[in-house]
Image (cartoon, rainbow over all chains, first blue to last red; front, side, top):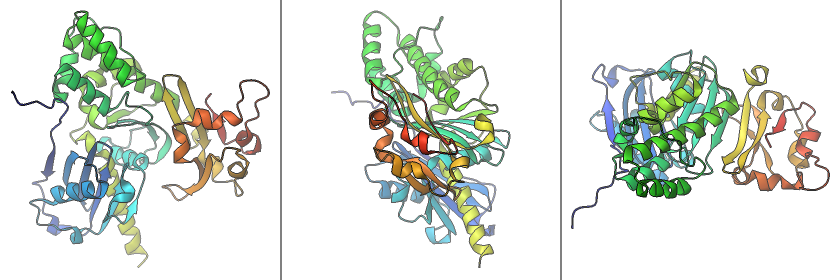
Length: 292
Length: 99
């Protein structure tokens, strides 16, 4: 039998800057974002991004946090004891065994996105594995309004994984393929992934191409999250974080629906939460030094 | 900014049947000392907590967030008068419902 391919599986990776040595830093901080689908660990040296990892969350939050941190530390020669302050965030934030404090993912995403996209950023759409968060922030990355929807998988990364699996398309190719349609099809159901999958199966049977079905799903997803953004009040500049930010099919349709262009960055949009947690850790470490 | 520049937190969900969020103006909420809404809510939805910016404010308990439409039904009967108690006792008008 041919080996079964897991179309939903995305690439896990770690990264370390070649630009400086952590041993020259005076303050080393870390943030760990244990999400429902993926976990990220970020290490910063004097407020500059030094290393990070991005991997799938296992069934055990403490182990996922440890594994993500170990992978970020890999090849650096740094150990956990070299890090002055560590902050946990995300769905599993209270289960990060080595963290000095837990901070909500809403506050961390706003702070991380402010670092990535700059002080003009006012609205963030974080499209995570099993929830979406619409966040408004000020020029310092402080949250001024937020809304989170985690009741169902529609509009989340897990929903997109289910579609990739149904259509036999690698999750990383979904966005590009969804744009290969001559005419934009009407969206499928945007209220439930299960209903959307049933609808998609029917559309495939009726002769729709994979590209057309993917376009209909990306469009449904964009429409759904746009309504969340409209609820908190959309204000430019706007950016998208989370795994879906890498899906050009959803991003371009969301931009069209909102009538604004999302800011672009060279940072990995999936690490926004962990990055924000690491920045909060820096604040906490500096506060502790001042209070000594 | 929405709410005249105040910090707004939405707790609840959106699903196929609609948008169900309780909207809390946390800048107003942090000014309230007694937070009468917490004891007044007949369904016990609200709790006091310290947020990420060290403000003491009210939020909807986690266990109610995905069923808020049903948890709030005590104050929103299909027939008869609707008196939304949390809103009625909030003198600063910090609480609103989206449905």
